[in-house]
Image (cartoon, rainbow, N blue to C red):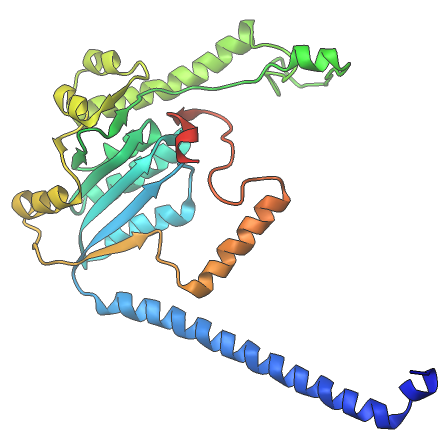
Length: 315
């Protein structure tokens, strides 16, 4: 086709018409997709609004971090008069100490207003156990993993590796502990002592809340707070959990001891159920993480103080 032919109006008119039809089609598809999204959102909120009194369920899965949105949802459940009780379903090896503390405190505000019961499924250790003891009653399976009361701070000393390849780090700092420990040297002396003080302070708070919530003396708690994990059956024996069971047993306890009606529906409140349309956002988020060299899904490496047992378990 010659340049003269391309500029011929007889060829341009059909092309322009095809472009207009294409634009019209994309506009129609856009508005259809928007309508589907609006209907999905309206349907989700309408369905929730149609439920009267209910038992709310939140699920704490995977590695625990602080989450302001989650905290707001939990606190709203405490204020909602239609929510007669709260079930906390746990399957987590723990996570950051701050994340566990946030969940413990948020669930405490709910517990002051209505019954809260925790159900540990496969694992509820470290910061996840910290979360569980915020409840009025804790259930676990006989072979669930519980406990792991402890805190740690980990540091990689890559000094020998960096020395082998001829790299060294240098810095100007405002004090002897700023930006310590360095990746190219081990934790020693005053730096190690300062970090040990950080760990000990967090550990002391963890031990205190376990002792308070489980009705144990501090010496009894310290005897269990060496980082060990226990089965649910062992946990019942030493007072770390209340009874063997799952959600069915938790519901039976709510009915028998807390006078919660047996026919109330159990409604998932966190994380909120996703419609297929909203799955697109999760997929795009996964692609963005992958582009940064992070796993498309699952936890990112923890930094700072950690209360965790076997992070790789959830991968």
